[in-house]
Length: 277
Image (cartoon, rainbow, N blue to C red; front, side, top):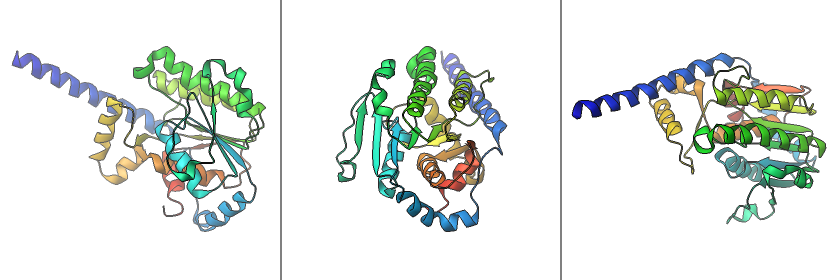
């Protein structure tokens, strides 16, 4: 009986090790594709923010109840970059802080998004942080959320006048990948590009470092694994959620003539720390 238990424990450890190894191999594939920030851009960041504020732009966030969306909303309000802030989700969120009092909330049914087209109208900038997991929603549910909901929301945002669409994707995203997660991420990246936003920014972070309100055991194990590694090596394959959000905003205030830009994990670290935050 003891031998059987030891064997089971050993198999579990081996499975986790195999998972981590596979993730690292896939995440290394897209290294070097991102956009960094130069010293000159860092020096002018406060000026870029001020110029951006003067444009009185409006913004929407999809997935504000999730870890990245929640932190992104907080950063947007603290930096006061937009004249109007709207979050779009399946339920109304409750905020106690005074800073959230002017946040507009649009409650929608993602299965009938066409009926809620008005929620996507009149926004200059959009951030999509929607996502779930196969473990939580099943394979079909994962595809519905991470591909179908995202794509339909992007279509409505484009029709509603959104100029700059920001998509949170994943390191290793590739529509030809044999891993469903990375395959779906790569597919939705390409299909959103076909909508031809004036500016389309794709963020491909590695393992997101945060204390999730939602329990995801596999992610917890991977985060613990990275926590035991040297900082320089871990930074190449993981990133704090707050750094991702700051990178998104620092990138948004920078003028760009690129129709499509991919910001990889290394560039996210650079952009997210551009102002010394």
